[in-house]
Each structure stands twice: as C-alpha cells, then as structure tokens.
Image (cartoon, rainbow, N blue to C red):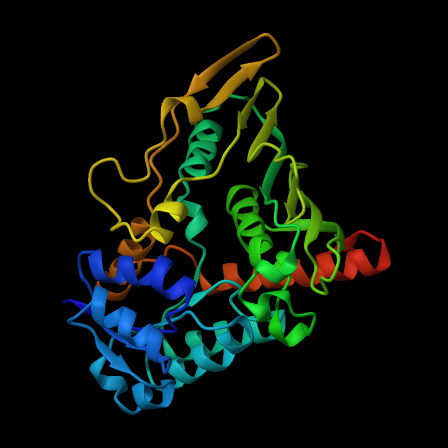
Amino acid sequence: MTVRAALVGYGLGGSAFHAPFLDSTPGLRLAAVVTGNPQRQQAVRERYPDTEIIRSLDDLLVRHDEFDLAVISTPNREHYANASAALRHGLPVVVDKPFSATAADAAALADLAASRGLLAAPFHNRRYDGDFLTVRRILAEGAIGNPTRFESRFERWRPDPSTNWKAWKESADPADAGGITHDLGSHLIDQAVALFGRPVQVYAEIGVRRAGAVADDDAFLALTHHGGVRSQLWMSALAADLGPRFRVLGDAGAYVKHGMDPQEELLKQGATPGGPGWGEEPEEAWGRVGSVGDFQPVRTEPGGYQHYYAGIVKALTEGAPPPVSALDGVTTAEIIEAAYASSRSGQVIEV
C-alpha cells in the first residue's frame, strides 16, 4: 500500500520540512498540496509536477476518500480546526508543532483521534536530529553514568523582529500561539520528555527582550523529572553569543555539543533528503565526552528526519505505534501552559 498524502499548507514548514519527505519516503506519495496562494502553487508545480494542487481544505475534505493522510502545516492557530476537520472526515493526521495552541485543544484532538481509531501524530521531527540521537546513545551506553542535568539550547541572533516574515509568529495574541516558547520550546520540551519522561515541576522565565517585539523572544524553562534529573532549556532570538546546543552532566562524566543539526539548512536550500551522507556532520562539529582534563571527541549520529515519516508509514500500513504519539503533543502543550503560568507568578508549577 502506498499512503496518499495531502499536505495542507506550503509555507516554509510545508515546503522545506514536509513535502521533501512526503515525496521521497518509500511507501508515501505526495498526492496533493492544499494552498490558495498563486506563488506557492507555482512553486509546487515546478518542484513536484505530478502533485495535484487543491485550493482549500474544504475542497480536499469533499474528496477525503481519495487520500490516506492529511499533513497540517498551517499557522499555529489553525492546527486544531484543520486537524479536527480532517479527523472527522476519516483522515489520519500529522500536525506540525505545536500540536494545538492550547492544552485543552490538544487533548480534544487526541480524544477525537482515539474515538475514531485514527492516527494523530505531532510533527516533532527534532527527535531525529543527529546530536539528539547521539545524546540518546550516550545515555543508553552509560558513557556519562547516571544523568543529573540536561541542558539544551536553541539560540539565535535576530535582534530585529521585523525580519521575521511570519507575522503570526511575532503576535502576542494567545490564539496565534506565537512567540519563541511555542516555536522552539515545543522541540526542546519534547526532547527532554522523550529522554526523561513527563516532569513533576516546571519553572520558567519568559520575556520580550527586543525593541518593538510583542511576542516572547527569550525564555528559560527548568523541568524536574521523576528520579531527580533536571532539564534546563534555553531559547532566545537575542543571543549574541551562542551557548552549547547540549551539555549533559552525569555522575561519571559529561557530553558537550555545539552547533546545530545540518538538516534544516540543507532543506531550506532545497536539498533532497536521504541518500549517502545525509545528516552527517564533519568531525570538527562533533561533541565531546569525558570529564575535566580528559574529553574525547564522539561521532555525531547521522540525523534523519526521514525516519519520522517512515514511522508514519509503518503506523498506517502495519499498525505500529506512531513515532510520536498524540499524548506526547498534549504533554508538550501542558508544559508550555505551565511555563507561562510559572513566568507570570514567579512560582514553580506542579504538573
């Protein structure tokens, strides 16, 4: 069986992070792209000439029985409405992060999918970053002993908020789910939970630092997990000096890694994913494992966002568990809401 996928939305997310994998993953076919934007329609025709263009979600849903999967890559405020409409028409969904703008909507989406026996999977592709896969391997091997502290950063130097062409990402309206905590925080939270489980406490400092900005652009979250591991997560658009991507401390050593997984930049440049060398980092970008005075380089695992969609194919055709569950999306949304509550009150929030 080939899964006939309809991609709803063709902005940066749809064009760079979804379409290339829907087109190249075995068992998947990019059957249609839903967009009413003439420029984006032309871009689809040029890169995917065999893909049908559908002007609206309503037009897609009228023909729902011609497709096997809807991939929702629209602005954040539309995630719940678009995904729930697809589910009500019998279509499994992959939903870009955040799963929904609120925890209540995320839970409702998970419940709707479960009641209909359909897949609803958040697109937390960063579980397939090479450096994150390396962290998982190092922890599994016991290379740093028992982990005690997990530090993770997505930091950028974008001091002018007007350079962000996605206006809704700079919106302070809660319904837009804009701001850096929903954007980059969704990935950082999901990675921490994937490693150490749902936290029991959340503390956060979330603010607006750039002149002229109205949505949060600088945030720090501290999560305390069962067993005592503490995750400290930084995200910022105003970091003139970039900290380590990962700094993982254990009772027998540490892993430290700088720099970002290379897949995003390759995809933005229009590269076709997969194939020899995809997701590989040069040796000079590798992280280090060890302790004071005795650190050794450790090869970064090849990143592979294609494995996310390979997992979607297995879930739809073989009944395997999805690569990311709907409940994972709910957990991330709940932690984000707890983080905002903590930042407003200055208190630790029990979750």
